[in-house]
Image (cartoon, rainbow, N blue to C red; front, side, top):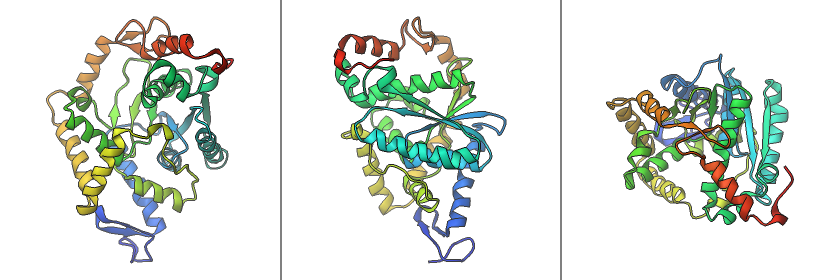
Length: 318
């Protein structure tokens, strides 16, 4: 198997592109896909300060690596969820990358520890408030990333959501006709209110397999296991269904999601108009000041309930 571009020995075959690449050409391909994503969605420029959400997995570490190599000013935030064993291993991966690759580019790693600030790990908090772990995790992560972006004056928050993630999310939203979520499913979302960072997904043109290959070829250590809290999540089922379709018809996920974005861009109500409507409904939370539609935001409600219900022995000093 030879590289489609330079004709040397190929390291990876990409059926959806009917192509194969050597390591060098594959790295160029990956970077080119991110550049296209950034430009086509007008995500950010080299003058902007970017905060990358890193988890220790392949997607987020690959994203941080790519943005730094492309010359962007990209720092990162890691949220330690306090999941026994899993969080320690993922944190180690993030620290190793930060101390080597990121440090060479002058980038900074910010760390937030849920156990210290929220008083318990994700598992304990979810049990205390009787909510699914993924929902509790999402609420805390959104709050902490918003807070970090504001405190450190970042213009953009970037997450490592890839093509598989976005196609699976789209499938779930379509199956349940969640029109509100469909309207806002975009790789680039404007800030909810003035003073907060916009949210972007620069990896939406790349698959999980391609990002795993990127990490392996570039010797980026990442945690391979799925988060143990995600077991039973419907997203995993949707990914499995799409993977079966992709095996039979390469390019299915790409066609499904990209065609949706194309239709969305031609919709009568652009995202900027939707953002204006959202901003009209939002106001500062009475407890913390972050944007919410109610008097108290979901994070503050969660924490008030957790402080009441989490056993004292599980509560750590903040």
